[in-house]
Length: 147
Image (cartoon, rainbow, N blue to C red):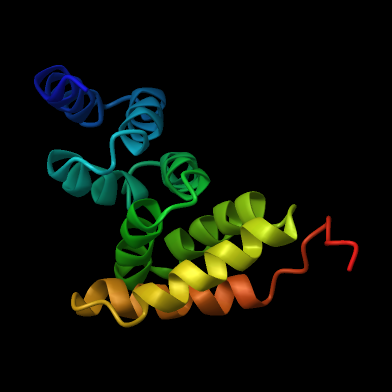
């Protein structure tokens, strides 16, 4: 893995995320989500999930982070959710349903990770993870296991 090249991409996407055009910001959020494990990506991702100019940016960035289906992506979404106003929270919830509303095993993993994150040392992540867990617990996935 070329850390320097990845860092350069993060810096470029951070700049794109500052664009006046919502399409640029949405693309930046989508791209940065793939690099969410890099410390330099976290703050711009939080800003894009809570984008003040267009909630499409919120939805697209949150969905890309959630599609990672890992602790890193869920932690960033949880942190944003803890600070989100009602409008942003609704769009984050829409992304949660879109990502975790299909397969039962994805939902189970999301529930497990959000429960784990609810004990995070960062109070904002912990609070958001509890909200995320609550949201996930109301989802009835389309495809269930044939037990």
